[in-house]
Image (cartoon, rainbow, N blue to C red; front, side, top):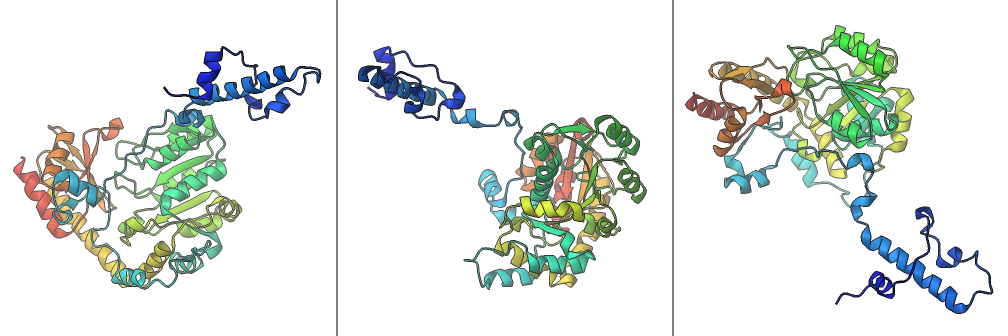
Length: 425
């Protein structure tokens, strides 16, 4: 038979004193301090035992879930993409026999200098530089922005969350422009903020008039924009960005994770002249470092001081910073890989146009969104996966229902998916 203090209390039918929940951490001596010193030792001993019984019963009836913040209990988990080793076990295929076109990763990987630098790391046993001085200096030179406006994170995802933690109070509002990158909504919900959607137009451009009206009505703290947009691949026009920046009140966060694959320059230099603009960038796409988790952002001077105060001190590992610096040391390789992916994007777009049941959308990123016509997009995704080809399928939101997104790979990847798609016509 299991024995516990709580069971003993129940069997003895002892009446426990009523103790406010805010006082349960007090000692039993404090609880009885109001009693007269003339009380018998038996009464004192009984009260001590009753208090312990109360605590034991309370502890045994609670669960660890009771400690969770209430707003998180209905939070839907973010659905991540599975890595090679998981896919290999699930599909019964060797990793090299899987064509992974579901997460917009760079199939060429990083410059060779990265692996060499990682193999010769001098100080993996020492905590990393909390200010990422070497990397930020290189980024400032490349991006043409002051180093004091740069912050590096464990992926741009960390910087999205950090920005929200520094600016949003519970109940504050952000404006989101779906369909777009899901982390803005996810992180807002984690931070107990409200999300107001301003859906994109039919061509996936942002509804600027809708944003202006929503900002006037809801008084948001942040407006999130993405250029090129994920998953549609279209650019945000300069004129639309200028109109959004003119909205009084909110901070504008422009995510440029895929900017290197477009014909337009980054808006990073704009931050020096605009106190309400944040730019986010990443090493995951162009530099092929998705597995190392390195993102960076350009923040206005009035904000970045507090970002520094709130960020985790050692948020970017030694290995990640070494890899990022090494990647920047070979701009020729980065440019060549970019050019290859852009060229292959055009080849893949033309191929997708030739498939009778697909309608691809033009893209300035390293992926192409396709509407699946006359057949089930989810079943198409499963058919491809059974052939070892992974693509992203969308069942929601409604604007994306029945769509798949295909990352741009190497020429042989395009040929492989072409063969499967044509066989299904």
